[in-house]
Amino acid sequence: MPRIALLTAALTLSIAAPLAAQDVRLPDMGSSAGTLISDSQQAEYGQMLLSQLRHHGYILDDPQLDAWLRDVGIGLAANSDRPRQSFTFFWMRDRQINAFATLGGYIGLNAGLVLAAESEGQMASVLAHEIAHVTQDHVLRSVERAQRDSIPILLAMLGAIAIAQSSSSGGSSDNASMAALAIGQGLMAQRQINYTRSNESEADRIGMQALARSGYDPNDAAAMFQRMQSAFRANRGGERERLPDYLQTHPVTTARVAEAKQNAERLAARGSGFGGSLAGDNPLLPGSLRIATTAAGGDTGQYGWARERLRVLSANTPAEAVREYRQLSSRASLDDAQRYGLGLARLLAGEGGAAMAELGQLLDRHPGNLWLELAMGEAEARAGRHAAASARFDRLVERMPRNKAVALTYVGVLNERATADAGRRAQAILRPLLAESGSDPVFQARFARASEIAGDPVRAGEAWAEAAFLNGRPEQALLQLNTLKQRDDLDYYARARIDARIASITPTVLELRRQGVRDEVLRGG
Image (cartoon, rainbow, N blue to C red; front, side, top):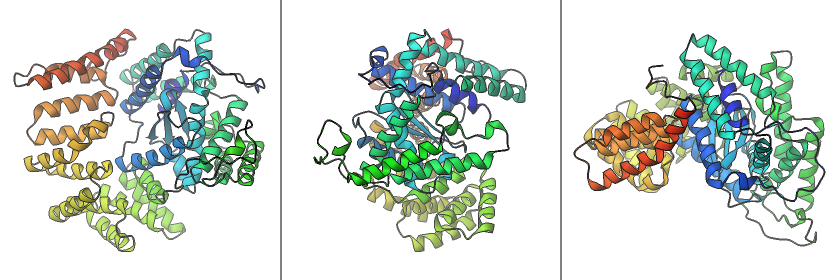
């Protein structure tokens, strides 16, 4: 997907001007960047980035993987230097090794980063590093420099979106891709968010502290650096573009690996590793003082299952994922997590019987495993064993009534049945989660479909509009809401909800139009 170079560069890098490469040695007495962009504006920019990446198909939205990433990320954030900072974590489906942080605490991880790691701790070390870029105001400082250089942040972002859309709507797709790639490479060359060496060193050090406080082995950071170095060496001799994106903006040197190892040793010597105390990291306090910190449970034990689900969902097709597992099995026997991935790939490829056989054997070995239970429920439903699937899902809902992954997987199965009873059951499962799921496009789309087949067109229309907005199509959302408003069967409360949402979406659409950004579907592009 060559246009990802444009979008990840333009939408994240355009928020900052080029940063000097020198090591700033003066003490940092604070930044005024927070006065330039309010917290609400930062959140708006982060949400715009996420919606536009969704719009162009680069986000991997999956309830199970999202829940795992959120659990790991929130644990690290709670043990960071700013535990009250709000964060939004999301997946990019690309298999390049990459991760980034942007305004509003929005942090994206590529599927390739997890596939390159050997453990949850290694993945978490990169996530902790990106969290540190946010908590230490590195992104805000770059925005401050951009403001000083008179670079309009929002204009640059919207201009980049306009370029991407115009490239995709005119001429051949190959020409559009080449044009987008050339623009993206030009933006990357500007190194607009290439943090200074001092920023990187600080993010390494602060991130490792959060990693240790959260119960992970701080040595995982150095181990991940070494794996990225290996990926770089493996790509030597190929095209320059094959250098992992993360190494372009976060260069890994031998000195940096050595420094990571030294930091890990220092944390261990101070008794601060694996969820211990970190008083020794505060130079204003005596080294002998010990202050309790929030100790998380460390590794969730879900890494293998999550990695294989990512492998399947980031593959171009389920059939390609099946072939990938055949290649893996030719080198060594598949472990249980990989067998789960193979079963999932076969399920998505339409090989329901083979999937059920694989998953059934695994469930005998891992009874109660949620990754396996949900996949087996889907396999049973697609094999026509609806009673067995419903019984399995009903048990899971009873046991975990507020687990969004369970609810959304079950609702996906019910929506496939497309009966009024299934729709009403799906609505009943999702309603308790409505208040906390306003920004989840998968939730909104499945609630919309459930309402549709249940015979509730107003709720369906509202949810479809919300899904469109979250997927980067605010103009479509506004059109849907204005059409819905014309219904003569709206009650007072529904009309008030629709009017309020129209009022909140309209400024976004007007600003996009002012910048020349129009929905390509609505304009027939």
